[in-house]
Each structure stands twice: as structure tokens, then as C-alpha cells.
Length: 139
Length: 139
Length: 139
Image (cartoon, rainbow over all chains, first blue to last red; front, side, top):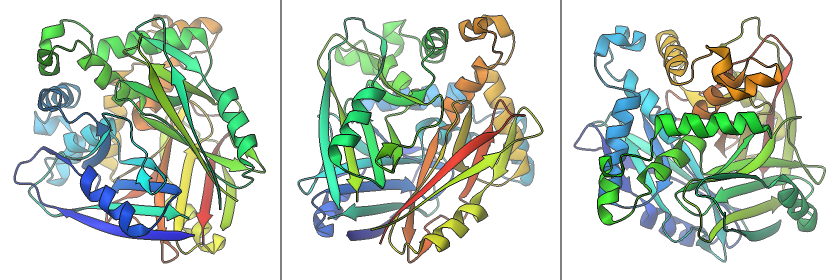
């Protein structure tokens, strides 16, 4: 069994940001030499997300507005977590909706993605250094 | 390491539909010859879902009503994504709640599911051809 | 390829409860002897969850209040599922938000978790025996 482990670093300039990381993950799959296997991509922080959806700007605005409605940032003190001095309780909830991880099949040495599937890093409490883990295993 | 890759095709007659695909996945596990491993089942489209829950008709009605409340289809133009000519922004959000994929352990050559766990394809923008990927790896 | 399969049993004293199971999963990874691979942890019941987030009491209160807002337990008869004699339709929805499973990379024989990542069992319809599956595969 072959395996590859890589940690990707992010430091977004805005508090919330969605970044397409598909190309980076594709390159790691090639580097791994795995032809048949699985590729795990997960946020290593609990206020960010890795998810798969469409790379369409309007949709990303919709996601942002929708998450704000389901888990509003304010009022800050509506959240017990923020009594610890944090102001990011909403980011924990937003990331829960969007998901921590995706698992993508590797077939014939390539990510086995559907026609519109793109892998995103979703940041909900940015402006600090954070990591994403890519783990590829297979033959 | 053994592996099996299969693409399942769906073309639902209704816009929204939940289909139990457990039997199909079980048969693929047998066909794979894998005794100990992992079975990934994922939607390859970003307006549909693969998830695990109970096969109970009332619960499925509850899921449908609940998703409509959390991510309503209308008004169509409340979503930026729909400015592209689409009317399915809500389906992207609904699928996000329900999830893209499930990963099920394969133990002694069988899906290692709990007593009520059933695997479903969730369609939120149907009446067109779409795929689900099944990838099984192990020994 | 090595593999380890373990079923963990839970019987919570309260209807809803979040339990940190990270230590237990870490010990199973050591026991498996797997150095490079994947560790799946999933609820085997459809009204409970396995998820990763922060072990902070205030945040857990926030999760509980938020889930009650998104998928309220009452009124019981607002849910078709509860016409079957159950009163747990809300627990199926709450678990859907929190997720069924997590997949964690195993690197150098250890769970490859970020600094605040902890694995939780989330119970939304407790006071009965339920299982979580841990499946570890790799070399």
C-alpha cells in the first residue's frame, strides 16, 4: 500500500473565504503514485471546513448569506462559547453545516470527481494560520 | 489490495426524491471480494446527496419539509446563483445539509451497518441523468 | 493491509449528551498496529452522531441550543415520523446536521488531528444501548 500525507497552510486575508483547492489536491494524487485508492481532505481546525460544491461566485455569496442566517455571528454574547473571550462560536456552527472533510475516490491515478465537483477550503474565522490535511492511500 | 469502482445512474421522475440504494451497494461489496475494508458511496453531482438514515416514509416527508424550511426553493431570485439562469440554488444548500457521501466499513465481506442504517440517494434537482460513485477498497 | 474493527457501546443517562471519545479511538489505533492509514468512526444508529469539534463546555451548550432551534423536539406531532409512535423525529434531523461519521488519517501510528480537534459521540435520543463503529485500515 502506498500513502502520501501533506499539510496545506492557509492564512486568509478576510474572516470568511472560500478557496478552490482542487488543483493542489490533484497534484498530490499524481505525486503519490496511487492508481486505485482514497483521498481524504480535511480541515485540521474546528472553525473551518473542506467541502465539495460548484465553483460559481453567485452560489458562494448564497452560501455565505445562508450560513449567516442559520448561525449568525452577532450578537456575540448570545453564545456561551464567546464567554471564554472568543468571538467565533458562529464559525464552529457554520463549519458544522459545511462539513469537516471530503473523501474522494482515486481511479486510474486521478481524482474521480463529477463534472462540477470542486474541492473547497471554507474559512469562517480567518486571518490566522490554519492547516488542511491531505491523506492518500491505495495501490 | 482489492478495489472496485462502479458508477450508478439515476434519473428521477420528480424534482426531489429519496431512493434506498442499500441492496445495490451490498451486491457491489460481494462482487468486490473485499473482506476487510472501506466502502465509499458519494454523489457525483452537487445538487444531490448520499446519506444514511431510516427507511420510514413519514421521516422522509419530515426531511423534505425541513429542508424546504431551511433552504426554500422560492423566491427563485433570492439566490445569486439563480441569476445564471439556474433555479436550483436551494438544491445546492439542501444537499449540503444532507451530505455528499457516506463511508461504510466492510467487515467479513459485508457492509457493517447498524440495525436501522440504510443508504439513500437524495435528489434535490432531478429529472436529469446523474451519477453516484461506489468505491470499495481493502483485502 | 492491517485492519481493526471495534464496536463501542453507549447508554447515556440523559436524552441528549456529547461524549469525548478521542482517548478510546487513540488507544484502538495503537492496538491496530497501523502506521499509515485511515480511521473511520461512525454512529451505527440514526439518531446519534460522531463529529469532531472543540471540547469546550460553553460551545456544547451552544450546539445543543442551536440544534433545538433548527430541529425542535416539540411539538411532537409536527413530525410525520412521530405518527409511528416514536417521539424522536427531531433526533434524526439533529444527527443529520452533526454528521454520522468522521474519517481521521493515521500517520506514524497516531491519529493525525489538529490542535483542537476532538472526536465526540453525540446522542440525541439516549437512555438506551447504542453502538459506534471504529474501523482502522492501513499498513
